[in-house]
Length: 263
Image 1 (tube, rainbow, N blue to C red):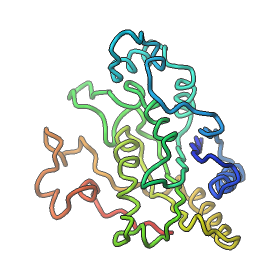
Image 2 (image 1 turned 120 degrees about the vertical axis):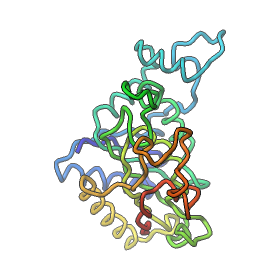
Image 3 (image 1 turned 90 degrees about the horizontal axis):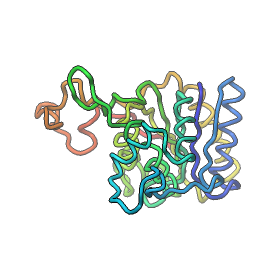
Image 4 (image 1 turned 90 degrees about the vertical axis):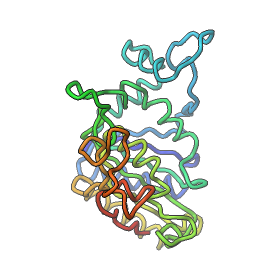
């Protein structure tokens, strides 16, 4: 594999930092290549603005068209272009972050906001049908991704009956609405629960689980998201009625129930 490890935690001495080190050592031991985007260490700017696209600030900023022009003309901010080059090189994306307020840290959201611009990550159409290529198709099709997240909560509370909600539902905006939208296949996430109460034994167990998941990553079945353009959705991008029942919400957009998240 050629792995881009996208890391968002402010302290290298954290559990997240230790797991990143373990993960990179595992990749090296198995002969995989890797590059790292450590967003806090890079002091990554998460804020979209006109300077990203060499856009005149006196003119109204329409982010979609401006980013598409800058991408096609080679005028994107150098930090954005560098991250796009890393992702183009990679066939696998590891996204590692602590689960904060049911989502990813703002700095990581800002990486997607600035790097996944129109023309690079989305905004392409099928030349034959004219349909947008997204949700399983697009410029990033062929790549795969895995989310690694630490959480202070216990594993059961991030399950289907837990007070915090099912982890795959919490990650749906990232796994389905960002990664799958751009064509990236997403394997089940790796949850490391009880992060604030980790013991040496618990860390050893977490490290073993991480090693196993990285070793099997190339052959792991991805989450069974529906493709937009395979006939499951009508022209208004609504699921056909016989497919939408009995499920609504995120569950309706899987062809089969996703595997339970194990903590």
